[in-house]
Image 1 (cartoon, rainbow over the protein chains, first blue to last red):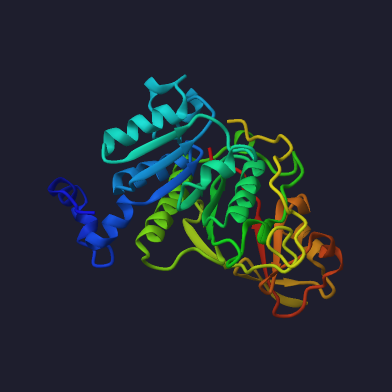
Image 2 (cartoon, rainbow over the protein chains, first blue to last red):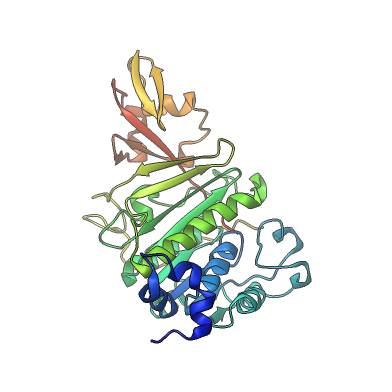
Length: 266
Length: 69
């Protein structure tokens, strides 16, 4: 791939970074990333990946933009209320960077559609808003051997880590299974600060850019936990669990199944 | 008393205190809200009541966060 004059100018501030350079930019342009969820986390992820010139970005969400989304879902505007989120997201991404091929999936990630969709991508970003989806994505990526970044936010807190299936600690190594409905508040019940979604989503984008350019240390085997009230981050080391129901020695989850309905309705 | 570290902060707990006791002390309403890592290993939830904390233990409460939209 040869960068055009326009591309060299557009991406000059990252091409100039010694660890990125023209080679890194070419890796970004040939990268294929699936972003699941075009909401609070998915917005900054999609914006920064598009701006950085990630060549193919799949974006998946079955919902339309609601007025109450706009406090944190910064890829959408007031005029987009009522528009499908993936349509609105694609428009913003292409306005920022027409170079990027944005593929939209106007549906939720399910056991039926997930495996077929994610096989076309290098890396998956979980920006969903329910435990059901988060565990399903972890399972689907495990079975497909697809690396992914997980994140969750709530209130003034957020956390994220990346997983290389079969090699590093997975979401189920740490969290095992979805908590019973009602035991953990959802964002619509507990609320969330928009900037927290921005911090964690931007960290997710950062992990993708590092993955594609093969720079730095991925968030493998450590959960990065953000406390917005203290403005502090903690790295919590986690490791693969031999009793993990998904990737342990005697797994009990051996096929992909949709979760019981449980949605953080925002 | 046993001196332990909880989420990076020092804490003294009563001798014989279990992980379940610590959940109460840390105002975790339900054990289902957290995963607990003890000295680097995730504990199975049914073992919380029988796991006694020892001097020098490092405990991490990892909270379930399901939000994202």
